[in-house]
Length: 102
Image 1 (cartoon, rainbow, N blue to C red):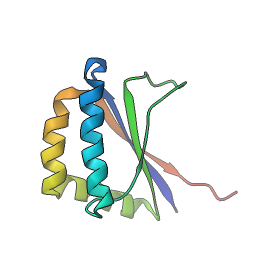
Image 2 (cartoon, helix red, strand yellow):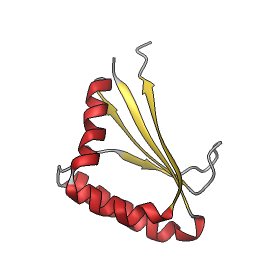
Image 3 (cartoon, rainbow, N blue to C red):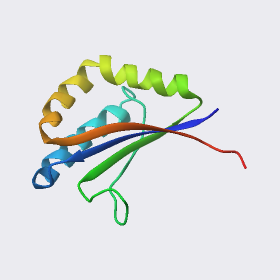
Image 4 (cartoon, rainbow, N blue to C red):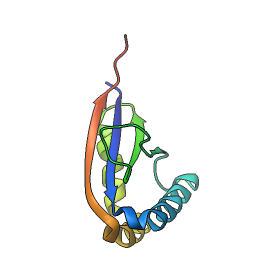
């Protein structure tokens, strides 16, 4: 079953520029093939407030998505950036969605 994993991150609104600058560094890790490539979304009209960034990616199954999470936890370059970014977080959570084949 293919899935979409979403990392939902709410950040301090006053730190948006700093938060996005760090996201660009995470994207650089994806460009280099160090981390799985995802897309980043900022809400325009949503139940989520404007200070929310969503990173999402498709995976062949839930195990592959969980392997990506493990990579995020163990990769030293990701950890270094995450330690810089964590000071801007208000809240964060992970969502998984089944991709329906209709």
